[in-house]
Length: 296
Image (cartoon, rainbow, N blue to C red):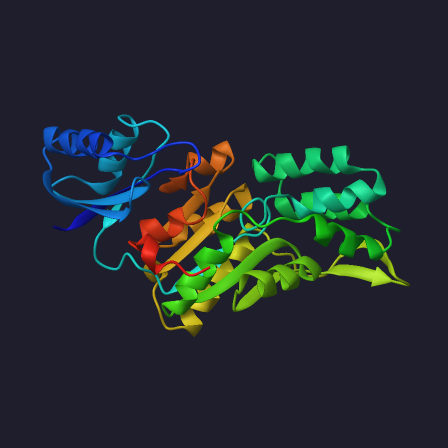
């Protein structure tokens, strides 16, 4: 069989049973696919269905319309396990938008969060939005960076995703339009090999309201992906990227497995793969990892 269709659910809210698998296999067969065996990746959580004779994107769309509360990924069976991971930080590896949380200490969370939302939905350019937001934080003591860090929570499955891929030989990179102070801590906590992000300008223990000369926006994230594929001598097809916002879209579209994670509408509509229900372990299921291979 040439292709694999993966079904995955969030076990906190749903179960994947044999009846749901049968719905998927029957729908594929009725659409003209040659359907092979199915294999549980995690009992009642995720499974693979082998198939041929139907284009993967069409197969995934077909099954999404048949099943509820189920993430569906369809792709070539060959090369599905990737050797490079690039993941966004805010609202992906961590649950919050870091700059919004920092803004609370300046009494400007509402105003800055509104700009963040516009940027993540692609309504305004990311670099412009970043400069606007950071300018509103001018004069804020850097003590508040530590206070913000304490409030940050990892997204379920984040550490498992990174540790499992590392153990299996992948190189892992945290790439963020956020700031080095935060990405360095999260890189160490989760276990990424490297982090790429922006820098605050600081004078006399306070933010100046200025950003460093190079901004990691959508082009910067794509360039980071290409740089690491070149350094590791692998193709873009051998990379998996994960993110939620408009500034993630180019790297999602360029990678062999680009996962829109609980993404903004503009991203979900334009990414081939998306996780709408599950946590970050779904990125592992999409690569064919079984639950008993996970490392936390």
